[in-house]
Image (cartoon, rainbow, N blue to C red):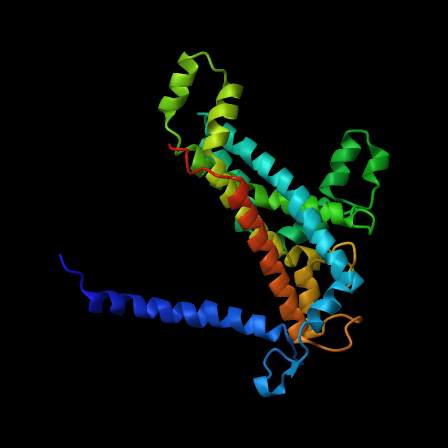
Length: 301
């Protein structure tokens, strides 16, 4: 049957126009902005001052930006190891046929339906509180009185307190992605492996993990995107604006674009756009590396 080109164009045109207006144009505009000095993000283009790669040079020469990149790198690497490992463990347990699967799945995913502001406030006020916090009460009950006196939100510990709280909130989301991959694997594979004498560990190592390579790439990509946009948790855990212990690139970008914080004497939206471009490049590099080293084209369910 001959395709109706007019109908195809008619259906595609609105989607293409929306994509160009909502996604493509802002991306191109941001890339262009990163080469200019712009006082306000709403300034017309005739007010932009071309500076070339000066914004990028200034960024990498600024200590606080380098610190923010190190912080986000630690959140991505260390937090990613914890989140991916624990979420995979929960996914394997919940897909093993245990009772109450739906209840446990809902409980573990629950932090993801609570706003980041409310969740971070809960950790600060009701978990890490040095007076009546949950962590203090638990440690006291265990007889660890000296450890219970630790000021978890003090500069020496606030980054690790932030990282732990953030990982706690992200486990449920990535667990569901793992579960969707595990549930696609036919039970017949496991039955055949059991008949051949393979125990549960060997089934997980030689069957489940190889068949989850594609899901692993998805999880890493989603984790990288969410980490690149890390902002609310850092902002709430900062005792002062641009606290070096918790500063991340998006928080620094916010301060540069909107002039937030005492350390910012002038606003430069182009400088902030350069930060966004760098973060975007980091995510693309991670995705490219994952595609290069993790191949699952020869695996079938």
